Image (cartoon, rainbow, N blue to C red; front, side, top):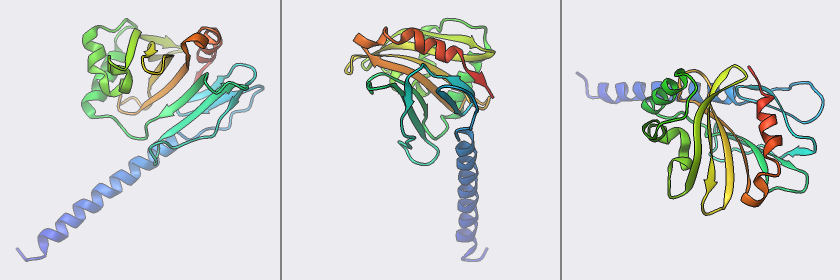
Length: 207
């Protein structure tokens, strides 16, 4: 074996990894690219959501990439009230295969309230909502939302004193690409727009 054969093989492996990463990033970018959906009134279309009707008078904020790459964040707020929001979020990278397998398998079961064991197995999916010191969970269940099985989590961020209702979606069937849509507001304002937010989420048409 020649002196340069190992570095050359390492370079080939590195190029292969970079190529796979680039392909994955392109896929995720395409997955989360907003679509142009015709219709009257405010409407959101992103990721697995073909269309979702927002409450009257709500306005779209700028699209942000909080973690760079394929990450995605966009708020919709009532006019003059940036504290209340319906948000589309994608973290920009896949969770682990084991975490995705847990998520996928739970979504394959009939709609149900999650057991403590199931909830704990979804720590990667839930992010900060999995931390009891940060988030007080009052509900975690799977639900059929217009023909798609999703995870619904509701509770309160303790430090912020803001309430949150999240829809977590298996974006490509693998369980590893998790799209999130959530309604969040200070606890004193949460109930005020809760019904409108629920109706918006129930208006979703999936791709």
